[in-house]
Length: 192
Image (tube, rainbow, N blue to C red; front, side):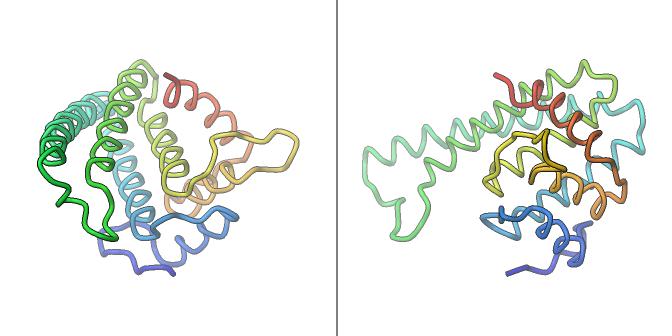
C-alpha cells in the first residue's frame, strides 16, 4: 500500500512506484518511512550540490547532529533500563520495545559518525554520503543485502539505486558506474 508523499517530499507517487518496481523482490518494511528517508536523502544531497565546496562543512554538521542523537539515545537507554528494573510498564501489548529501538538508534548514530568522518577525506563527500544513505535505506528499510552482482545485468541494489537516481534525483547513471560507486562507498561507509 503506497502512501501519498507529504508536500515537502521530493519523491512523487509515480517516482515512488517506479522505485518500488525496481527494488522487487524487496519491499520496504514501512512504505512511508522508506519514502520519507529517500526524500530527505535527495533533498540534502541536492542542497549540498548547490553549495559546491561547502559539502565538507555540511558533513561535519551532520556528524555533530549524529553525535547529539547518539548522546540522547544513550541517555534514553539509561532511563529505560532503570524503568525496566522498576516495572515492565513501558512494554504495552503490541507495542515495539523502546529500549531496543533506542539501542538501534544509538548504534546507527555511531555508525553514521564513523562514516561521516571517513567521507570527509573524499574529494566529493556529498556523493559518498548520498550513496551511503541509499545503502542504509536499502539495508534497514528494504531488508536488502549490500552485494553487487557482476555476471548479471544488474542486481536489486543496483536497480534500486538506479531508480532513485533516475526518478527521484533526475540524474540517471549507467549500471556499471553505479556498481563501482556502490562498491567504493561500501568500503568506507559500511566497514568497521
